[in-house]
Image 1 (cartoon, one colour):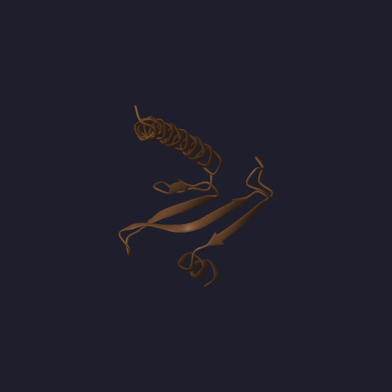
Image 2: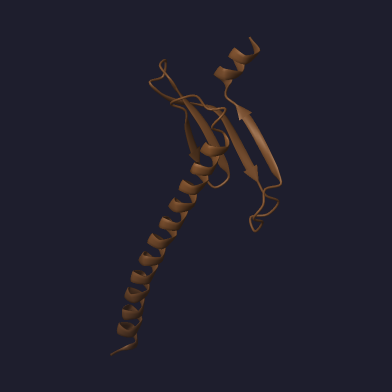
Length: 108
C-alpha cells in the first residue's frame, strides 16, 4: 500500500466514525430538548391554554398560540435563558419578550 492509499483508507474510516458521532449527538440533543419541553410544559401548565405549544432550543423557550388570522401558531411570549458562559450549567439571567400583537391587546 502506498502512503496515499493508507491516508485515503484512514479518511474513509474517519468519515464513518464522524457520521456515527453526529447521529449520536443529534439523538442526545433531541432527547434533551424533549426533556426540557416536558419540564417547561409541566412548570407552566397553570398558565397555558388548551392548544398552546412550547418550542425549546438551546437558550430559548417559545410559547405559541394558534391564531386564526394567520392559520398557524403565533409566538405570544419567549424566554431567553442565559448563563454567564457557555461552560456554565446554571442560568444567571432570563429575558422575556412579548410579541407585538399581544402587547397591544394587553396595553389597549
